[in-house]
Each structure stands twice: as C-alpha cells, then as structure tokens.
Amino acid sequence: MLSLSPAAALRPADPAARGSIASHQQQKSLPQASTSSRGMLSHSPATPFRPADSAARGAMAAQKQSFRMPEFDYFVVIDFEATCKEGPRIYPQEIIEFPAVLVDAATGDLLSAFRTYVKPRHHPVLTAFCKELTGIQQEQVDGGVELAEALAMHDSWLAAAGVAKNRLAVVTWGDWDCKAMLEFECTFKGIAKPAYFNRWVNLRIPFEAAFGAGRRNLQEAVREAGLQWDGRLHCGLDDARNTARLLVEVMSRGVPITITGSLVPVPLPEPEPEPKLKPEIQIQPLAAPLNHCLNWCACGAGFCYCGVPIRGDMVMMPGQTQGRYFFTCGNWTPSLGPMCPFFVWAA
Image (tube, rainbow, N blue to C red; front, top):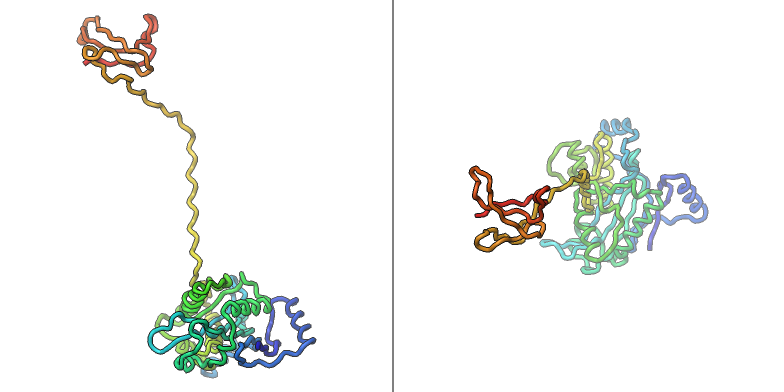
C-alpha cells in the first residue's frame, strides 16, 4: 500500500502544477501518512530549524533570504539504508530504504519528502544487527518494492513537484550513496537509473569550506553547525532530513553548492586542427642509373637516369682532367649537348 499525507505542503514550481493538485484535492481527500510495509510517499511540511540556543534561532530568523544558487532550482537530499550484518560486509549489499527530501535552492525551504522500502532479492531476511541499526522491520521490506520500481516512484514524485531534472542536484553526506551503493546495485541487477543520480554534491566538501576541515560524521556535523539532531540515527528519512537542514545552514553562510562527484567521465577537449599549409612543389631527386656498374673497362656502358644508354668519352682539353674518361647520357646533340644532367667520372 502506498500512502500520501496532506499535500498542502507540496509547492510545485509552476502555477499549472499547483492548480492541478488543488483540483485533485477537491475531488478526493488524501489519506494520512503511515509507515506501511509497502512503503510511504509523503508530501510533508518543511521541517523547521531547531538551533541549539535562542541566539542562533534569532539569527536564523533574520537570515530568511533568497539564496543565490544560479546553477540549480532544487536539491534532492538522499540517504539510503542497505542490508548489512555485524562484521564483514554482506554481499551483495542491497538498498532497503529509499528516502529523499526536496529543498528549494532559492529559499532553503524543505518542500517535500519521499520514502519507500525496497525488498532485497539476494538476502531477503534482515539480520538482527540490520534491524537494530536501522530500525527497519522485516515486514516493511517484505511489503517493499523492487529497486527499479522505487526509482520510477522517485522520478514520478519529482515530476509531480514540477522539478526540471536538468536544474536538479542530488545531495548526499559522503559519496557512498551514489558512487558506490546505487551504482553497484543498478549495475549488478541491470537496472537503468535516472541520469540525475550520476552527479551529486557531497555535502562534506562545502561543510568543510564553512566550518573547517576535519573528520566528523553527520550527527557531529549537525551539532557543530548549532542544530539539534531530529529523529532516529540511521533511519534513512531522518538522516536525509537532517542532511537537508545542514545543507540550508551551509547555504546560509554563503558557501556555493556545486557538483563534487560524477560517474560521467569529463570529455577531453578536442585538439585544435593543424593549420593547413600551402602545397609546396617538392623536387624529387634523380633516380640512380638502372645499371650502377659504371666502370667502363669492367662492364661497359650502363644506362642513364632516363633509360638511354650511357656513352663514354675522354677529356681531350689540356689540364688536370686531360686523358680522364667520363660517362654521360647518350641522348645528346653536338649543338645542345647532353639532354639530361647525368655525368660521372670513370673509376
């Protein structure tokens, strides 16, 4: 069974979507939210901030402003819970609670919440350790949905809220949810997931920009930010709500919220085309004579570059070369001389 809480707190992005929901409310009253074993899809009011002291609460009330997040319209904060056992990690690990909280990137309002339980396929019986850690009971996962259906339900929930997927950023505390857990299970089971899960904001990074570097878990970070922890630790929906409240606190300090992790490889810049050179006239060297044996006495005349038989002669003019034999192209005339530049002295 899927149950919806009163939709008054759902504030879609466009008037048309709001009008559609108002019309639906007139036709049918929605049942109250419950934690049924099938799962829960809830449109709940924004969870209020509860700083640790009154001074912090007053400062936060004064901070009610419009955040400048030009890259995104919404953030969806997720925190999966998965099958586990005490000691070594269970294999394969599977998601058993799929929660999400929708945050308005302009105002910091927590607009809506979503949760469904997921039925594990490979380890359908939860360990006592898992039930104690997460608070999830066996009957809840027994009545849960397959992961593929949970992803489709989550996508429909965002569509009902009027969220443009290209203006949405997934936010997590750490990289495990998107980089390891969801990616592994979808790959292992051959499930196609929405593309917006391939990029995410690891809130640890902007948190450290606001509060300084250091190792701390989510609960410690919430307290360090001056907020009170709300709900049960390791309940996925409660963890997601506290992460969402922490996100808004970081935003209020002027820290930019940008994508920190991605499963999509960054495309390499295309190499610049090489400039086209003007064609040059290339001078081909003359080929060697077809008959390389140019020793007149040993093998007689060979052939010139042009294939014409070589003719030999002797220098008759007085001087240092007088009496030396030479070879030249046989294609010559008394008036023009040799028709090609072949000339070589005899050995």
